[in-house]
Length: 213
Figure: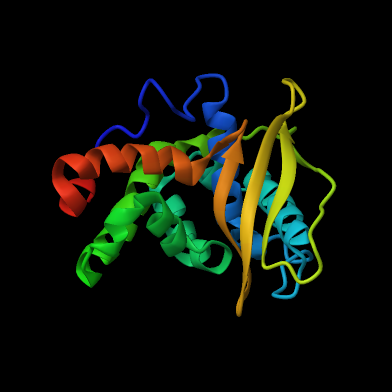
C-alpha cells in the first residue's frame, strides 16, 4: 500500500511519531499484560475512562518486564493484535469510516480485504514504536464528562515520558453489547480516521476500492 504519511496532512511529525504510535499499540496490547499483571484486567462494565486507564497501566507494566515485546518483535506484535484488538477496538468500524463512501460500494470480500490490509499496514508502519516507550512513560487522565446514557464518548488523556511536554491523546469510544470499544484516536487535534479518510479518498478516486486495498 502507499506510504500513509503525506507531506500535507499527517500525524507523522518526527518528534511525536514514536510516542503517540507507541500509545496506540499500548491500548491494543492491553490484555497481553494478563500473564504478569492480572489485578486490573478491564471489565465489560467499566466506564470508558476507567477502561483506558487500566489498559494503559497494565501494558506499561508488562512492557517494562518483557524485553522481547519491548524490542518490537513482529511475532509478538502480530500475536498480541490478533488476540487483543478485537476485545478493545471496533477495527471494522475504524476501517469503514476511514474508507468512507468506498466501503458502501465494496463487496463482502473487498471489505474483508480492506480490514486485513489496513491492519497489516498499521502493523508494518507503527509496530516498532513500542520500543520507544520508556520506563518513565505514563498516561495522565483528564476530567471525563459524558451525558447520562451516552453511547459515544471521548476520553481525554495526555501522554508524557517525564522528559517532554505532555502530548494530548484522546480516544473516541462507542458503547456496544460487549462493552465500550475504541474506534478513533486524536493526537494534537488530528483524528486518526479523518487523516486516513483524506488519503484513501485520493487513492479511491484514482482506482476505486481495489486501489485502496
